[in-house]
Image (cartoon, rainbow, N blue to C red; front, side, top):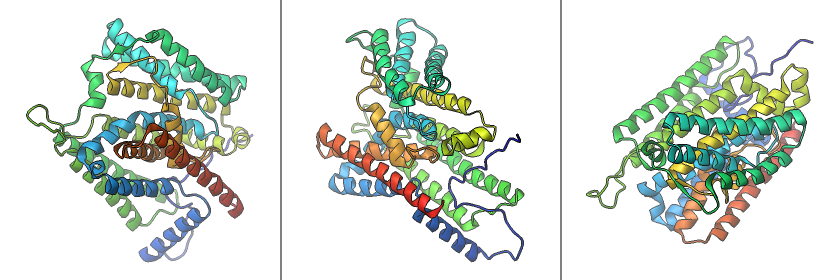
Length: 429
């Protein structure tokens, strides 16, 4: 049987078709056609991160009006560090959700990884590179075990990862000790969530992000032209690049403002160090899912596993690999959590960590039914969760009210996903 490779999914533009002969359309006609195609996609149920992005704007406006402190530079920086753990776990969960699977153990997997980091650094005095490698390997091993049980043995992911959820709580207790607490004293680890780039390095980061995004748009357009495929209008690409440049520049400018209440004691300004780390993870995940054969295979398996198998895709291998990626990202989040808390305790990775991470992925636009989602969904959804938690905290609401509101937002997001799929099915998309 001849192996067939699925076409690359278009992540940020209308469904494309091969260019055909005939007179070249004017830029105005191209733009009109692009907007019509995008509108048709939205009406057909493919809304992506649009609802979450609009919701994020509304939430920021409401909280900024009710509590002006919400819009201060200090609180803006806090949102990044507060949402880093949730966003990172959500990035890993998206790989699993794209297959229509779930990983309920990701929260405590991050706790296990954080415990390994704390023990190797503090109790055993391992060099930082070795301790970090052991932490990441812990995540890889966890994902390999979970993925093998799901893909090779055939146990449903819900059951396997629920077992992991319970077991990894015990592992953290065994490593840390009941009621124990292991402090993190390594300055490099602590700097990840507690220190900032210099203002100059912040602008370097801005230049790299802007140039990298612009270069990506150009390279993708050239690649599509060489393959005889339609490309998005130049004005649309220009607007996207200008939007990224404007948002990034504004964020860097705000974060470079002095945030310390007493500059004589300590100066607080600059982009938090965790931000460029998140940017690198976002870029890497986007590249893997959108521009590699492996990413195409993930979407193919998530869309129709049997069709993917008939096309020659190693479905079991893909299923195993996404759990490895998810747990590895959870291990990275464990490092972030240990840095933010300056320690690791028996509750590491527990509480609402997993629920918020799943909520971030779904709220951002990733489908619970598989086959649809992007890494950027985790960032947008993580921002929504962080804004709700932070804004309601500033308004003085209790944790109970926060949970209720976040839960309602998650239900609404899942409802939008279900309705979108129904409309897409009805329209034949």
